[in-house]
Amino acid sequence: MDARSTIIAGKAVLGIEFGSTRIKAVLIDQENKPIAQGSHEWENQLVNGLWTYSTEAIWYGLEDCYADLRKNVKAQYDCEIEQLASIGISAMMHGYMAFGPTGVASRGADPSEVEKILYPFLTWRNTNTGAAAAELSKLFNYNIPLRWSISHLYQCILEDKEHVKDITYITTLAGYIHWRLTGKKVLGIGDASGMIPVDPKTKTYDAEMVRKFDELIAPKGYNWKLEDILPDCLVAGEEAGYLTEHGAHRLDISGHLKGGCPLCPPEGDAGTGMVATNAVKQRTGNVSAGTSSFSMIVLEKDLSKPYEMIDMVTTPDGSLVAMVHCNNCTSDINAWVNLFKEYQQLLGIPVDMNEIYGKLYNHALTGNSDCGGVLSYNYVSGEPVCGCTDGRPMFLRSANDKFNLANFMRAHLYATVGALKMGNDILFKEEHVQVDRITGHGGLFKTKGVGQKVLAAALNSPISVMETAGEGGAWGIALLAGYLVNKKGLNLADYLEMIVFNGDKGVEIAPDPADVEGFNTWIETYKACIPAEQKACECKK
Image 1 (cartoon, one colour):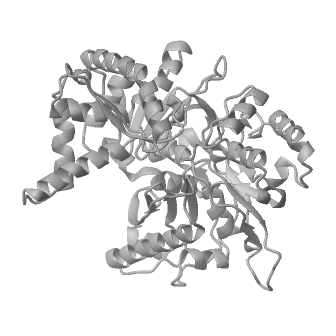
Image 2: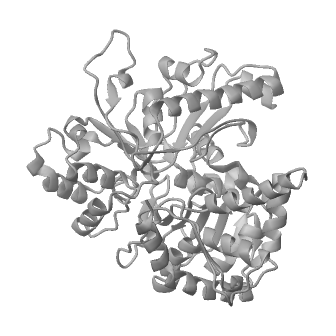
Image 3: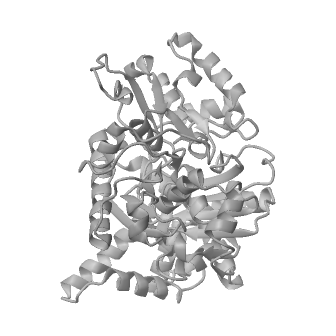
C-alpha cells in the first residue's frame, strides 16, 4: 500500500513529541517508515525564576504542529487525514503539573476538563527542589533527582504552597496531553519512573516508597494519598484509551480527524529515544544530545548503591535503566555559532548555517586532543550533576593555554558531554557495567562524524549513529503506537530488532586512543575548576 492509500485507508500511525524547542509530528506507514511530518517551534519561559510553558502555548503548539502536518499531507498526497490506526504522545520527562477541581462541570463537557491546572507547569529544567530531593533521597535510600515530579510536589509541600491541599491529579506533560485527548489518567512506565521510583518486578510505583511518602506528609492532613493522585502506570503495548471526539477536535481544529483510534501509553523523551535507537534490550544504551543530554544504559542487574549523578528509570517495557541526565548540551555552543553567523553577515557573506556548523565542527577536530587547556562550561540552566543550581555559561583559559579557533570549538564540543562523562565514568569504572552497543541521536550528531567522535572519546566506547536516528523521539513514539496495534506476538525489544530495524546497527565510530587520553586530561581540569563555575552562579544577579 503506497503512502496516499495508507492515509486514506486510516492505516497511518501518528507520533507527536513535545521537545524543549520544537513540537514534532511524524506520520508513519505500515512498514514503520515516515511518510509525513509537521512541526512547531516554541521556547520555555523563565517566570519568577522558574522555567515553564503556559497551557495556552502547549495547546497552540499542538494545534499548529498538527496543522503543519495536515498541510504537508495535503501538499504531498492531495488527501486529508480522516482516521488513524493509532496515536502516541511523548514529551520532555519529569517536571510537575498539578490539577484540581474547577467547581464547574458543564453539561456535555469533556470529563477530562473538569479539573484545572493549579500551579504553573514546572519543567525538568528547574533546580529549585534541592531540599526536597535531598530529604526524599535519604528517606527512600534512593537517588531522587531535582527534576522528578515527587521532588517538585514535596518542595511545594515544604514551602506550604496553597494549591497542594486541592490536588486531585499530578502528571507529566505527556500524561497531560494524553489525558485531555482520551480522558484517561495513565502514563507509560518509562515516564512514570521519572515521577517516583517504580518497581521493575511489579511494573508500577514502588509500594514501600509510596507508603513512606504518605507517612512523611501525614501531619499536613491533606485529603489525598499519593497513589490517589498519580496516573496509572502502563507498559508498552498495553491499551491506554481511545481518542475522544473532544480530543480529535483539540488535535485537528479543521474537524477532519475522527475520534475512536487507540493511543499507546504516553512516554517521556528518554523512552522514545531508546526506541528510536533500538536500545531497549539489556546491555544496549543510547545518548540523546540536544538542548539537554542524557545517556540511558539498560542494566542486567541493579547498581550496588545509589549515586547522586545516576537516576534509575525504566525502558517503556519496564527494564531497569541507569540514566545520566544533564540539563545542558548544545544551547551554549549554538549561541557561539550564532556569533560567527553575525560576523559573517557583517562581512556581507551569505549565511548557510549547515556550512557554518560543518566547518566549525570539523575544524575543531584539528585542535589539540586536550583542547590546549581551554575550558568551557555550557550551563545555560542549572546543572545538578556538577552541583550548580543556576546557569551561567563560562569560558576559561590561562595565558599559557593554546588559544585558537580549533581548540575554542573543541572545548565547546567537549563541554556538551563533559557532565555526561562524569556520570558515565561511575557506571563503567566503578560499577563495571557492560554494554554491547551505544547509539547516539539528536542535534549534536547532525554534523556527520564529529559529535560521534567526541562522544566516543568521552565514554571510551564505540558509538553508533543510525540514518533513522535523525527522525528523533516523534518517530520513537510513533513506533510505540505502531507496536500497540501490530505486536505480532513479540516483546518490544524483539519487535524493534526484527520488524523495525531488521538488524541495522548503524554506522559505528570507535574511540581514538589519543582522543580518549586528551579528553581524560581535559575532564580532570574541568572537574577541578567546577568551584569557579559554582561561584559564578552564586554571584549572578
